[in-house]
Length: 256
Image 1: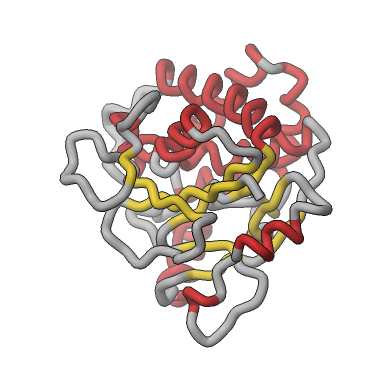
Image 2: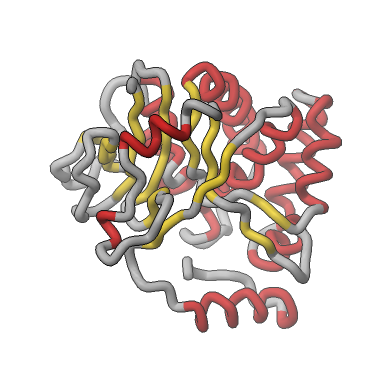
C-alpha cells in the first residue's frame, strides 16, 4: 500500500513503529533540529508555523510526498480502530488502513458535537468572529459556489476538527489548492498585530472549519474512525473553559 501519514510534532516524542508513519518537525525553520524530517526542507512554508500550526506539515506533505494516500496525525493524537491496553499498540496500522481504503478514499475522525451552540457561535465565543467573517467574504469573492455550504457548516453543531484526515492524493491536491488559496488571502487581509500568540494561530484554526465545507460542496464521501489521545485529557478544564466562553464571554487563551 502506497501511503504515508505524517505525524506533526514540535518536540521529541514516542512515535508509531509502523512504517506508515512519517514524523515531521513542524515549525522547524530557525529551531533546534530534532531527529525528524523538518518542514523547512524542499518546498515549504515552515516560517508560517506560528500562525498555521500543523498546516506547515500538511503543506510540506502535499508538495513533497509522492504516494497514493496522504494523512495527517499529531504526536499526541492518532487514528485508531480499537483501544488496547497500550495506547501505542492501539494506533491505526498499515494493515487496518489497507482494509479501510478498499471502501473509501477519505478517512476522518469522528465529528465533535457542540450540542448547545453552533460551530460559528462556538468560534466567536472562544476567538475572534472577524476571522470567520473575513473568511466568508473571501469565499464569496473567490469561490461563490461554496458560500451556501460554508453557511450550512457554520450554522450546524457538528464539525470534524484537528485537521486530521487520510485522503487519496488526487483529492488532497484539490483540497489543498482550495484551502491554501483561501488562507493565504486571509493572511494578507486579516490584521493580527494585536492578537496574542495563542490567538495568532488563526489560520490553522480556521482551516479546521473549512474541511467540512469543502467535503460537503464536493459531495466527498468519507469514513469516520475514532481518535486516541496519547496523553491524559483534563476534561474538567476543557468543559469549564467551554462553558466560561459560552456564558461568561471568557475567550480561550490556551489549548485544553
